[in-house]
Image (cartoon, rainbow, N blue to C red; front, top):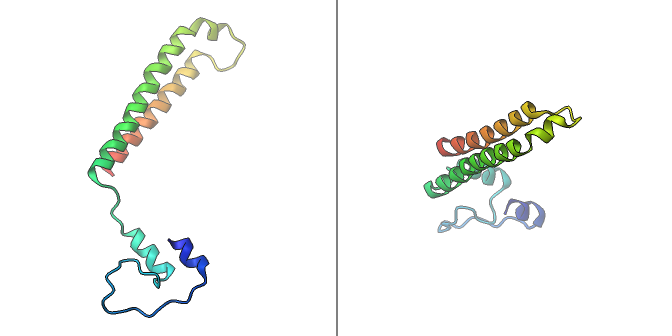
Length: 109
């Protein structure tokens, strides 16, 4: 809506006393940004669904990544790559921890 107001080039109309619209077409950009800044955010079900998705994705990436890593351990240790088993394990753990952390942040913030 903000881009529509800034790019339209229309002149603002005078405000009527019986206007109940929280975002009328004549509102300037600063007022719109102020209203968006005070918007409280998500409902409880959105928070629960979002946080559950992040935590589940973190758990899935940990278990599937570690399983795949264990299956390929011998091949990884024999390879000439400088990223051996330990560094790959650290990458999987840190990615999973970051996703679970995002889920917890989403829950409580």
